[in-house]
Structure formats: C-alpha cells, structure tokens
Image (cartoon, helix red, strand yellow):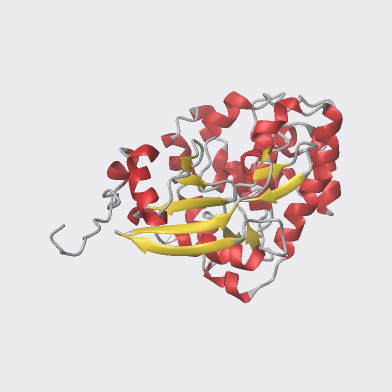
Length: 312
C-alpha cells in the first residue's frame, strides 16, 4: 500500500439531451449508473413504461427522467406528495439529480397491474371491479390542493384551443384514414366543451397504471408524470379506450362508482384532442362501431347501452 487515499470513480449517466439519444438507450445501458447512484445491486429494470423505471429490492421503485424530460419529475413528485395518504398512490422516498438526469425514488405498490391480471379475471370479477375504479377516479378529481397549481396547463381553455387548431394534422400524422379525418372538424364543432371545472387529471387512467391484489381489488394508482389539471372528461378518454374498452355494461358500472354520468360525445372530443391520441391504433384494438361515423363511435366506446362488444 502506498498510503494514498482511494478515489472512487462515479459511474455517469449517458447523454440523453435529444429524443434520438434517449431512444437509442436501453434500460440496461443506464443500469450501471443506477446501481452506482443507489449504492446497491438489487436493481432490476421494468420492461414497460415510456421512461426508465427500476425495481429496487422488494419495496422501492426508482424512476428516471432524462434531461429531455427532466421537468416531468416536478409534476410527478408534486402529485405524489399531494395524493399519497388521500389516494392509494406511491409514497415518495427521495429525489435528486445527476448528470442532468432527475430521479424519483418511491415506495412500491403491492400487487400486479390490472392489465396483467385482466385475462385471469372472470366477467363477474371485472363487473365488481368497475365501481371501485370509478370511485378511485372520482376521489382523484375531488382533490383540491393549491400545490397542484404547478401542473400543466396554466390555462385549460388555451390548451384546448391549441389542440383543436392542430387536431386534424395530428391525426393525419398517425395515419388515420381520410374518411375519419374529414369528420373531425364538423364533429368537434357540434360538441359544447364549455368552461368546465378544472380538476386534477391522471390523463392515462388505464389498466396498465392500476395495481390490484390477487383477488382483483385495487391496491393503487401510479405513473403521474403526465398529470394535468383540466376537464374531468379528459380522463374518461382513457377509461373508455383502455379500461371498459367498448363494453357498455362495464362503463355503466364504472360510472355508478364515479357518481355521475358523462357525455359520450364530449369524451370522444377530448379523446380526439388528447396529447397522446392515436385513433389509427384504437380502431385496430377496439370494437368496430356499427356505422363509420364519429357519433356512432362515441356511443360504442363511451356509451352505457347494452349489446356492445366485450372489451379486448
């Protein structure tokens, strides 16, 4: 030994300042920096999600926000700080930044995602679960906390107007057929969106983001990085598409738990205006409406009538 102090070399996070740099990375590419950051080796990447997420032991989860999306950590951390204890959401356990990457450590919710559990649930299990999910979304929409003012957009009406201005071009980029594109301006022109009460929105309330126990009971709701404040029906876009999936009976039961009805046409309007909307995909995975019109589609995917197709 020469008596000189040992210098520990920190493992750096890779560059991810552009979309191309970020998309070129795998979660395994980032894993050495995560292990170094946490100082523990029991870290396993999750395969799902738009941002890198890692299981840390049995009770923690680490979520990373590359420089390109680093502002989203403020949204998610604030939402969890406000909601934990009010709703079954992950408890924040720490946050920070390294090499331009932001990170959020949180307590892991028990169970598995509803998307994983769905195939094994009986029709009766699914029916029983819907009011519980409706109550969960209603509880989120009822939260009134000034700390949530940091959630985008600062002005809901301006956000809707901007989405509306680009709505046809947005759907053209996704490859939506011209026959559907031609209907969008006229349909939106007949839907009164008004000046709704602004509520906290998950924006992606879907089976992938709900956790359930082995009996199919809800244990939590997660993934709040795209959370917003706006009209409640904006959240129902994902409910009709990814929870009830065109089953009118399931939608009716969901709304029983939610506590009030929603207008299917307004739900469709917000689905068309949604930031992540992709109707080319939806038309592939959801029941085909009886007629190739947006009014028929609204009734088929957000209605509560009988005789509709079962969800995928």
